[in-house]
Length: 237
Image 1 (cartoon, helix red, strand yellow):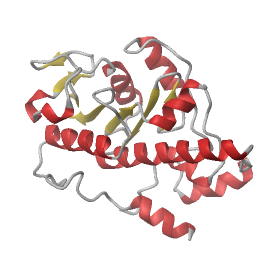
Image 2: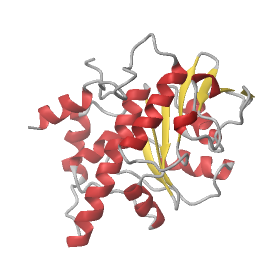
Image 3: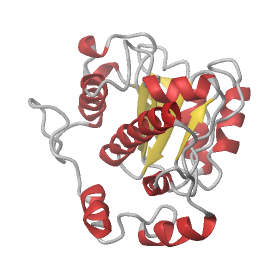
Image 4: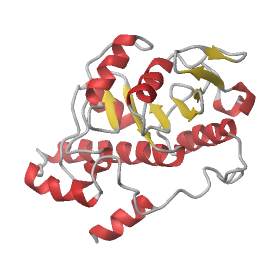
C-alpha cells in the first residue's frame, strides 16, 4: 500500500488541461498559463491571487501582476533576472521577491507555485503548522509543514519569513496569507501544491473531531527515508 502511494506520487502529470498537453514543444509561458488554469480548476486559488514561475537560463519567468489567467498569453509573462530586474511590457506579480529568493537560495528549485488555497489559508490565519498527523506530510520534505510569521505582502520581510519556514522543506504556509511551494519542475510543483492543500483539508477536518494523534519522529523517519529524503522523491524517474 505504502509503495503504491509513493509510486503514484512519483508519476509525472498528465495534461495540465484538456487543450494543452504538457510537452517539450510547449513554450514556458504557455506551460505557466496551463498551470494557472489547472490551479483554478482544482480549486486551490481564486481570481488572480496566486502566482507561478519557472526558472530560466538567466533568471525566471513569472505571471504578470493582476491579470486574469483566462486573458493571459505566453508573451505576457515577465522575465526576471536573479538581480530582481524585470523585462517585459507588464509588471511582475507583487510576490516576485518570494520567487526570487527561492531561486537564489534553493538551486534545486525549477518552479514555484503560490496560492491562497482555502484550507491552507485557514490554517495560516490560525498560525498553525501542519504537524505529522499523517505520513503524507513528508511530501513537503520533512516531518511537518511550517507556518511562517506574518509580514506585508510583496515585501522582503515576507520573503525572509518564508525562507525561515522553508528551511529543509519545499512547502510552507504563509502567516495570514496562503501557501507556497517549489519543486524541480512545474508539474511537480503544482502537484505538490494540490497535495499540501489536501493535507490541510484533512488536518482541518480531523481537528473538528478531536486532537489528531501525531506520528513521532521515530515513526516519521522511515517515511521520509522512503520518500527518498529531502528533494530526492523522484530519483527513479
